[in-house]
Amino acid sequence: MRYFIVDDDPAIREMLAEIIEDGDLGEVVDERDDGSDIDADLLQVKKVDILLIDLLMPSRDGIETVRDLGSSFNGKVVMISQVESKELVGEAYSLGIEYYITKPINQLEVLNVLQKVNERVLLEKSIYNIQKSLSIFNAPKKHENLYIDKSIVTSGKVLLSELGIIGESGSKDLLDMLVYLFQHENETKSEDAFSSLKDIFECIISKRLETKAKSEDINREIKASEQRVRRAIHQALIHIASLGLTDYTNPTFEKYASKFFDYEQVRKKMMELQDKREVGSSHIRINTRKFIQMLYLEAKQWNG
Image (cartoon, rainbow, N blue to C red):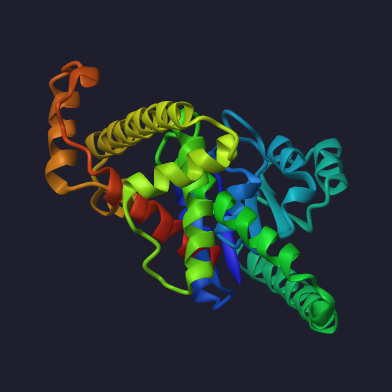
């Protein structure tokens, strides 16, 4: 079973993780300190079965978070809080949470509750697998491919969010690249979906503008796309370097710094930020091909 813990108290998160692991209930795949840091896409990519979430948190509380998730999250929710207000507890249950655990944390209570939730998740998965096996032969293949394409985009969105560039204009170009690379790999039956950056840009822009577009319009948009992507990647470098400068053990920094960038690039950017130099005038050379390739490989891994 895969758990995601959201609580603004690191001691509580650590305690819950220990109970889950020591009780052989599954694994904690991720954790956050506020509800504003999660959404349905993140939980889907992490393949979360059970969300453990605190009721009261600084920016977005548990009830508001669960309400925003709505039916987009298919897993189970267990609410945790020291608040015993009947109104709040009732509202939480009305939103579909499975159980409500009170603080201070009691190990036996947590074990008992999570064992029950585990059993329910396993039962529902068993029923789903039976239904899927009965209907799989009638499922249109084109619908299956459409679902996979959407999944690779969902994975890409979460990755771009963790890299701090989901709001950049170049993020759409990067997501279009993921879909193109995924389709190209499946059509050619080759895991080496990369030919050249020029070909990738040409393909996504030609598809976006359709065949009726003039060649000069396509070339103009290709150049604009290249600039958007370079700016987005540079912003990702700034974001990663900022995380490392604040906390060198930050999990996002540790996981992505060396994957998406060269060590020297990250080090230089951290020095720029530390010296409060103008980051926009940086001459650090960005390896666009490496970034796109790693983005695709990571998204494909999460999608699988």
